Length: 407
Image: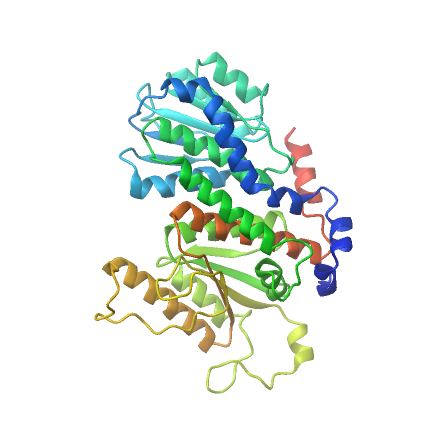
């Protein structure tokens, strides 16, 4: 692994030179992507005319980095929609899909194999088709031939990892127009404002000790990341972190969501990547630092949804809060109490094993805004991690070779 250069993160000129394709600039444009999407949706005749009727079910076809769209739609629909939303990547299209259902095919380039194959199959079965991607692309042509609705996307960057919100905005608006997922424009505006705030805090000129994204990159520069989400929205962000760490920073990461993944994540802290441990079980403060530098150690990142007991700020570092007791006096459901207490318990168990634990928590607000803050911070952090190691965040040679192999 290339040595991580901490100083590079505080040198805006060096960052600009290393980020040749402008990944940081494209991520900073995420709030504007939402606002452009809202404008384009207002001009789209299909969304204005009510051509999208409520379906029996929705299948969202997306793959790679575009899979965030399917993950968000399915997660939001699970708690808010009268219609089931089913995410998938490639054939086979579920056997029950027919003329009463909608297939949403998402591809920034309009050429991704999985969504294209699913779009063709949806058209063959007579399902309603919604395409989202580049104008005048193969996906646009398939959608037109199926008499579907195509929502063109103009992204400022070729990497779909940097265009998540350009794709997600029309998908959310289409689902809202179809009566699948109620989504008011002010929810998207709130998300755009939150993305702008993260972009400001994560700008290249900010100092690494005050920038949440840079601080997180430094923390995991020499660690194997274990990323655990503590709820549905945090779970989406945790899975997104896995994608960004692998594709952008070239760092393998184990991701999961509570409660199911707690055992798998904690088990890794007792294995070959465990922290040096003292006799009492905590971190060994007398361990030889030179030996520590020669071994890879796992670190735990807790991606936590907003906790009602915290200040409405972005938190990096352990929350260090006691479990919520039955007489807590807060207006919380039993499920919320269980979620918060389990997340804190896992964090405490990891720290007792000497692991480095960090928590990423959004400020309170609408669900989409909280999700936007988590995703954006993790996106910036993975990009800074790549730049600190001297990697181009948009170009992985092995991925380029794979594309050549598949064409």
